[in-house]
Image 1 (spheres, rainbow, N blue to C red):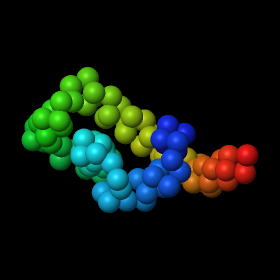
Image 2: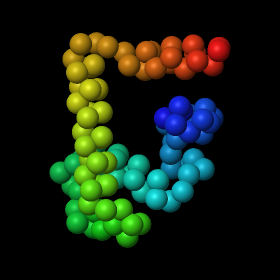
Image 3: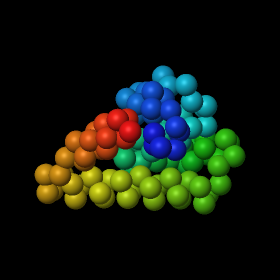
Image 4: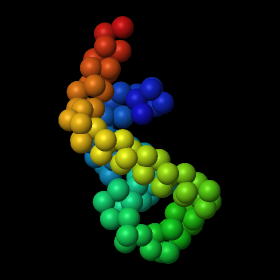
Length: 100
């Protein structure tokens, strides 16, 4: 995310609490939806999808969001099962890049 934003402070703020980050309402709605898919996908309702469609998101985009969330959930389960600490790996990457 930091690579895409080119703003380490904003990336960290989004990662720690996107609800208070300086991002647009569409992005916040997408992130809220991603959280709900992650934590309680079985509770997603037509109203949840309608809210995102009201922001102009297409069904193709909604599908892509669910795909990405599902992939990250999958990777995290594999990492958890094998005891891989992804946060340590990512923190090392950020540290190395900031030293360049």
